[in-house]
Amino acid sequence: MLSIRNLYKHFGNLIAVNNLSLTVDPGETVVIMGPSGCGKSTTIRTINRLIEPDSGSVIFDGVDITNLGEDELRSMRKRIGYVFQHFNLINRLSAVENIMLGLVMSGQSKEEAYDKAMAAMTKVGLEHLQDQKPGELSGGQQQRVGIARALAFEPELMLWDEPTASLDPMLVREVLVVMEELAKYRAATMVVVTHEIAFALHVADRIVLMEKGTIVESGIPNQVFVNPASHVGRQYKELIEYQLSTSARTLAGNRVA
Image (cartoon, rainbow, N blue to C red; front, side):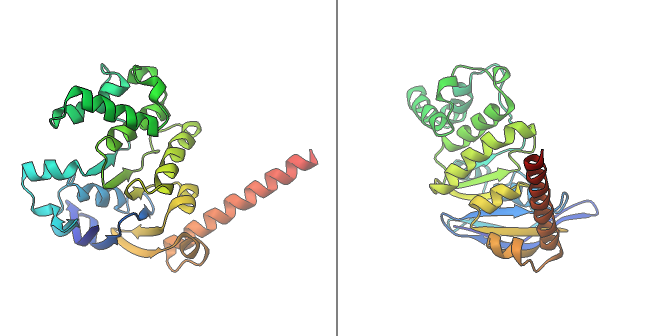
C-alpha cells in the first residue's frame, strides 16, 4: 500500500527527516510518536507532498508520488485523506458546504457532493449540524467536520497530523472516538501522528517511535510500551507507569475520603 524509502528532508542546518524508511500494509493503522521536533509531522506531510522531500521516494499503490506532475499529484491526493492540526474551515460556509467544496471543485455535481458530504457527516456524528457555520461549532466539532471533509473523498489512505493538538483537553475525546471507530472498522489504511498514548494503545496495529529524524523503534503497542528497546520507548513506558500510579493514588484517596 505505502512504502517510504530513504526519505530525507532538511531545513537549513536542521535535518528534519534522515534516511527514513517505512512500509504500511493495506488496512493497517500505524501510529507515529516521539518527542516534539523529532520529524514525525514532516514525515507525514511529505507523503502527499505538502512538504517536498529533498530525496527518497514515497510509493503509494505502486506509484512514486515524488515523481508526479502537478495534475497527477492533484488526482492522487483525492485518494489520500489528510486531517490537519488546525481545522482550516471556511467561516462563511456551513459545515456541509465546507465538506462539499472540494468535491464540487473536483468535478462532482452539487447533488452528488451533497450526498457524499452528508454521508461523511453521519460517520462523524454531525449530520444534525450540517447548516451550522464553523463559528457556531465547538473546536471538537470543527475538527470532526475536517475529518468528514477528508472522508468524503472515500480515501484509501488517511493521514492524521496531530488532529487533537489544537483542541482543549475537554474536547479531545470526541475526536479520538471518531478516529477509534474508523480504525476499528478499517475504513481506510491510517497513518497517525499523535501524542495521545491511550489512543495509540487502543487502535494502533503498530507503533513507530522517532527521534532526531529517524525511526528508533517499531512494534505492536504491548511490545513498545511494555518492553521497549529504545530510549524514547523507555520514556513512554515511564510516563505510562507514572500516569497509572497517579490514577491509583487518586482513586485510593477518593475511597478514604
